[in-house]
Image 1 (cartoon, protein in one colour):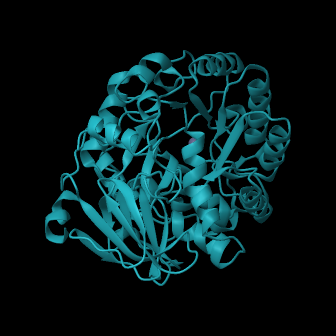
Image 2 (cartoon, protein in one colour; image 1 turned 120 degrees about the horizontal axis):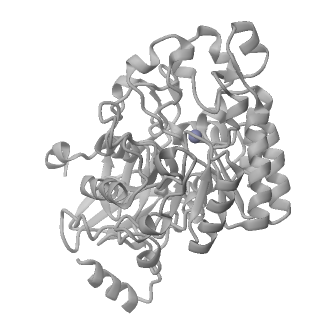
Length: 475
Ligand SMILES: [Zn+2]
């Protein structure tokens, strides 16, 4: 079905699905037609919707949820999922796909496969590529490659400053008007530390209703820093990255957003003080949102003992009181969502002296399992919470149509299924990502994504991404 047919049909059915897709984001799906063609059906048999109630069947037809009920039938594919948990497809606001420039560590194809295996149906890939994503042609290249791979929607993030140099603003308008329809801008990896430039970016972004995402790090306080400034760094002889380097920028940007904003998003919140500032900003109704990574919710700087470069990340792993504050903030909604900051690196960039290791960790394939472990299995949250922090909130912050939607008839079939009886052990070697820098090597993972659907197309089956080389054998 063409996009226009789908639109007309939705209109006929009175559906508002993707209603604002054409004004806010590219018309997903039209560029990569459904491989099985029209009237393709997939029956998800025996799932627990949001982990609740009795097992039920969900019939997907032409990319939409067509029926939810018991004893449904199809001439198409049936996937037996007895008792597994059905969630909306996950959305990650913060990944690094490394294409263009470092295709030896990750490509849009391998990153999309990692995303599908992690349950993701949409990701935003940061602008610190080589060359930098600071113009429409690179943004369009990234977008089209994602659509051609067709495992996950890959939305390019445009840089705020030209070449990430922090001097001159990029043309937000040209990137927003391109086929990639860029709606989020960030210099992530670097902070827009110049307050005059940040003020102009905030004012410019407000006029265009695009989202800015700030990597909060006052660079004059982190020169040469490789680890959280605290007892462990001091004992291990590592240069410290103090909390104030993050918190001073969060505070400054919260106030700038209050006075000049616009919507501003805080990347990878990592400290107890940042949580307090976010709590204050939200109490003043400042339109500030924030994400936290799985690694800042589970790991601390005690990991640095071995000097293993895999534990180097920016912002650094902090202390248990930061972890506790971030967990509570996510539960309270003070921190809005989880984002992985999936950052692939080659082994030569990680297996070296700690202070020479490149900062960053893989995240796409382990995120759901870790969040489930912390908040559902070891905590008192339910699967609705997981849907909120890993799908609904990031889709809302990015105003992403079609993702993070309720599981209901007529909604787009962007879905993932969690097998709560499939324990596994994380090994970099087994991952779909091209890199191996997981900090969870050898760690037991309590649940696994068995199935992912992107607009009704199965992108992950039996826990494996359905790449073009596997689809013919399995479909
Ligand atoms: Zn960052």
